[in-house]
Image (cartoon, rainbow, N blue to C red; front, side, top):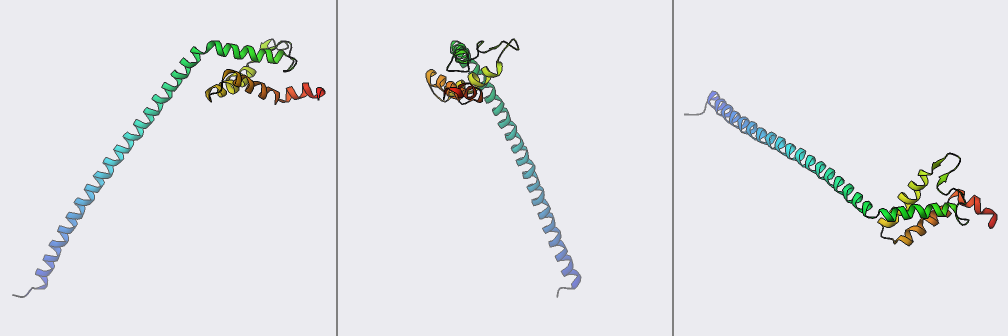
Length: 153
């Protein structure tokens, strides 16, 4: 018996339904995979952020412990800057780090020369003497030092 158009259409329709069902299942599986991967990525990002925070905390603790063990060194570095501020080869300030006009310690100088210059040099592996020389060189490169030593040249 030859195929009639209606039996051919119903076979095509059945195959089309099967194909559509199969594609719908594949799409659902892919969407599930996408959702699963997105959750994994989000979890990994969260884990990385937490690890970064933990690392920052540990680094801060280590830096604090290192500073605590080098307290005397830091005090000596501040005294060195104070002496250099007072000296005739330095900034020639009679009060050193103490600003007599404002009646305050020059905290900016301590921050700049000890924390920025000295500490950076020590972190880079330079010796105490080399780090102090870095302070001297930096101070001698300042406008204030140049203006006070311009007449000597």
